Each structure stands twice: as C-alpha cells, then as structure tokens.
Length: 112
Length: 114
Image (cartoon, rainbow over all chains, first blue to last red; front, side, top):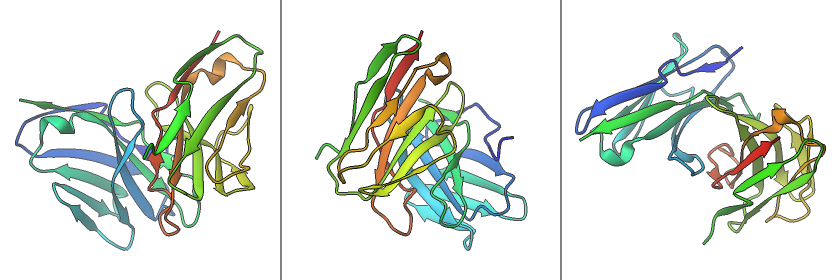
C-alpha cells in the first residue's frame, strides 16, 4: 500500500506560468512533509518542507501548501523556469521516525 | 567541499557475489542514510545511522549490512547478490537534529545483478 501518492507521472508547463505538483497521503500520523527535486544521474536535492502545524511555507518561487483534512499537499512554482525541469518527489515522516516515505515522483517539463 | 561521495557509480554483479558500496561525507554530519530506488518508484530506506557506532534498520534491510566506524564513512554491504537487488542506491547525510530528513544526497550507484 502506498502511503504517499503522486498521481501524475508527468506534467508539462509553459515557461513563466505556474507549476502545481500534487501529493496525497493516507497516514494521518505523518507530521512533516518534504519536497525533493532530482535531475537525471544525480541524487535528490532538498527543496522545501512543511510541518503539520502550518498550512503554508514559502521559499522564493516555491510554496508548499498543506491541507490536513484532505491529506493533500501541493508544491507551487511561480514563475516556472527551464531549470525547474526535473523529477519532483514528495516525502513524509512521522514524529521522530527518521524513515521518510516517498512518493513515486512527478516529472516536470518546462516548455520554452 | 565534495559533499556526499559514492563509489562506484556503476556495477554489474553476478548472482551470489558480494560487494560493498562506499559512501563518504565531508560535512561532519551525524546522520547518514542508505536508500534504494527501483524504476518508477520512490526511494526506500535500507539502513540509517545517527552517529558513529550506531546503525538501525530502515524499511527494506534484508540482504544488506552496514557499519559506521567513523563520522565520515557509511559503507553498505551486499552479501549473496540477488536480481531483486538491481536498483539505484543513494547515500545521504544530514546535520539537523530538528529536521534530519532534510538530507544531502550522493550521485547514486546503479547496480545490476545478473
């Protein structure tokens, strides 16, 4: 059973527009959520995180929204740039458990 | 500053062979992790360590062993390689006690068992 789901394997967005990547989870005990970005032949890079006590966290062009009642989070990238083309992973953890549960990733393609 | 360095980058093993995947970090991080990523899937935690001399199992530890004799190094040992261990392996490290999951990753080791 997948506790963290990214239902869109890929997403194509025009340069300069908003990219919205979605993530759903089933475990209500998750209290910390992260987004990682991955380029081909490289390891993932931490992007942004959010604690369950918040519903929004912003860092430059990147904003993560958390809707606990819907068990849903989303990553907004505004404006989208060609360098944002990558695979984005959503991940979650519970309490002091160091085990991150990862989604399968969404490949974002930014069109010029 | 090299960050997290993994060796080798690629390896082909025959069924039943053994090997060690090397991981070293030069950031003086206490926390270190080994993940595997299968095609089309998210990463799964194999083992992790919260400091030298301390290791613990993750989600998928069977068929693997680790050691952490120094802060810098965290090798992953595969004994009796099986085709199911064909995967991309990532080592990671982090420093934050509050957010140990905000980790820095190596470039990965692509392992094929035939």
